[in-house]
Image 1: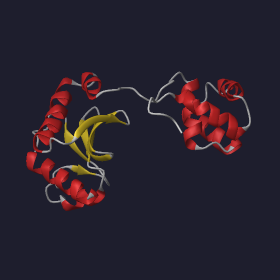
Image 2: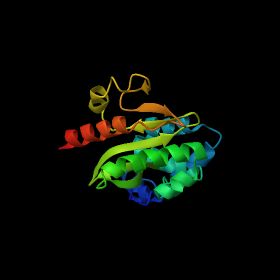
Image 3: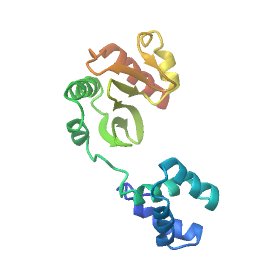
Image 4: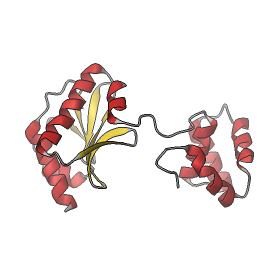
Length: 184
């Protein structure tokens, strides 16, 4: 299991133990496949050597030059790296929520900003080129707010808003209230 640092090499002892070869063997094998695309390299390790997805991903990404899974360490770092319009909207989303729910902690998880209560994630966002995806981590929460979400693109556990979204406070507060109730 990887540690919180995101360091992919933390998987290496487990890979050596489980698959019976020194890590340099696996690195050399992947270097021979360097022109092969990521999915094929993952499939190669999984199908031919029984690698788990996590071990294959750690090794392939390491060989491709990504030695850590962490791209950002703090919410401030995340906000700094996104489009200014999206930055303004994202900050408004979180400030709107934390104003009403000050006990929620703004953290980075999976390289995205999230609000959590203790160990439980309450809501998070990700920013794409043309929209912000909001994730209340629950399909049930989205179902409870379905009428309010009717004007948005809704997926199983997320919905999308424009980068310049006029923050809908009642909607956000309803989502947070439902998510916290679900976890209680």
